[in-house]
Length: 162
Image 1 (spheres, rainbow, N blue to C red):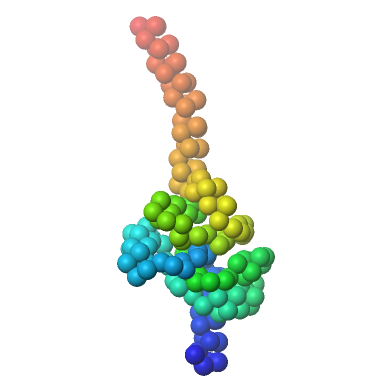
Image 2 (image 1 turned 90 degrees about the vertical axis):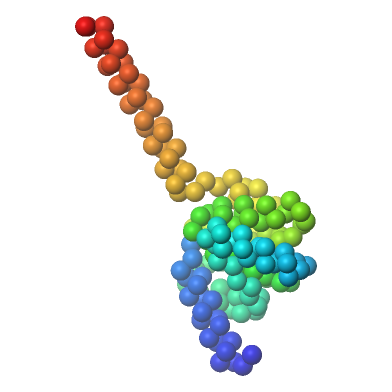
């Protein structure tokens, strides 16, 4: 890869990172072609873009970024894949599902709405993160509950008056 190609690749990665509020970095060392293909299919089905990257290029893209990725560049060892998502727990669920059969892929780190998570020990916590839609649904449910009780009480009051 020439210097110009590397510079272009770094700029492309920098742009992808700037556009992403949620991405995970996973260690995919040891995955054979079939399992890698299955991982790609699962990611595509969930609306997650997966990209295998060169660690040095990703680290340089992070360093050139306006955002602070803290220790994330230090996790870039071995084979790395970046999983870009719109739902915070989407990649974590896919990684956890694949881990039912083996220890791979391993979570190196995650960037979720300016929060940094380092290490595979955070996987369970990341799976438990609720999506925006789930939180909104819970809030609506909580708001509806008192309103439904008031409506029910009013209906009972009108029945008593008849």
